[in-house]
Image 1 (tube, rainbow, N blue to C red):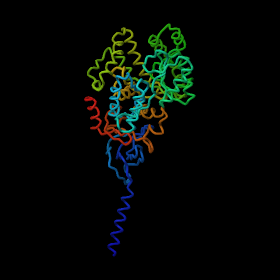
Image 2: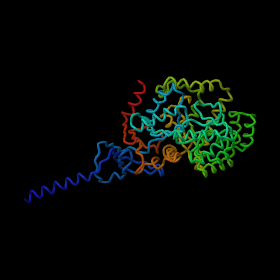
Image 3: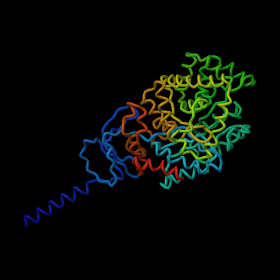
Length: 469
């Protein structure tokens, strides 16, 4: 009887110990977790259930668990999946499939989220969002502006036309009905007054806004109207010029044009004016998207042969054809125009560093997509991070411009941005520390998107599949 009782007791103990083991969908074990807020690195285990981080504990813990998907992250580095904060899906119906084929390029490069900054494929983008969420399509989470807002005869197809104040409400109503994530404004045809009024009305509705800025308004006016983010650095440079007011008046009277204004603004950059501008941007929480990599790429189209680019082979023939417009303009530019463009590109690097030093929030964005010559989806985000480090920014600050600042800008930081319990489990595992060398962001071992995992072999297979599609 005693032996039987003892056996029963042992079995009960074993049974209880087994039932205490908590089950998880995915476990990342022994990884070096990077805190994007502080740069601290700690060795931890990350537990994922239902697409979210359920638990994070020290690797030294004896916590008992069970899982059918354990990833050994020993000697690897884990950080939030990268965000590309400026991409485009566009080109009309004939390029829908070629745009769709770009989506795996983001995942293959550890980019788990993109901010689509305006295009003419909104209905397709919405379909892709649903397919990706359902696991039927490989690609990043897409936050989109839908169509851009501009004036009559806008540069980009599909833009919502604002010709008068009534059009503002109509355009914003349309975007809200489409459930877009932010409002993107463009500057090719919209008047300065209607541009400012559109921002003001969007702000009243609690909408996030970003865009180009008509040169017929000042940067201060744009900040006062309530802009959330400014795409590219031309507009920031204008606000740093001691001659901004007079240049604005010349643009209003059509005495000079956009590109004629560039050398004037660059040569009249004034540090005291710039510092006041940076302070205004910081105090008003305005984000700036520098897009340095595409700036350099386009500035040197007359010198660099891209025909042997590794990523050119992943681009569809229709998308490559859209590159010709910018290429022809570069090849036909005057010697002075080409020289000015290259000098401006160099200037924008130092301007980016100055913005960072002044604690203005920056967003890393590639501006990849059709029409933007040789700026490839996926890999260009890593090139942008490298370009930002080359300005003198620290790797930590540069990494913050991707997922961390991207989530805050779109007010998605409840779910994204850092590695913490309760966040969406969008993670990238690197084989080397990106804080030591930003180029290590390309050394990807695993990508986790919610409850889906991709190892290096699977990521490489995504790229190979595109060559046969």
